Image (tube, rainbow, N blue to C red):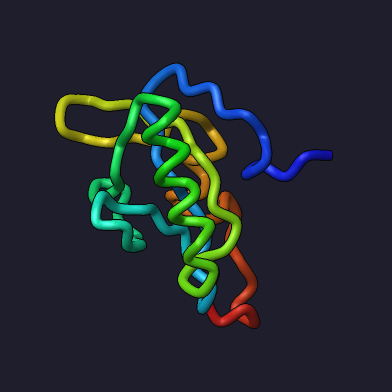
Length: 105
């Protein structure tokens, strides 16, 4: 199996780079300033393979701030950025079931 960062990218629409914050596992997005944010609306949206590759490589290099960066599809509704598939919608909104109180969330 090939790691996601080693696969050849084929970008066919708007995408963002997303990962999980190392400290607490929160979903984070890479910004145009090459920083991490929990706000999808602050994510850098790109639509070309070279731009996506550049942002992904920068995100991978930041192995202290976040873990497991990858390219995720998004939909643009005017100036609003929305997740582009079910997986990303679930990641953005959180678990689809009630977590036990013992998890401390």
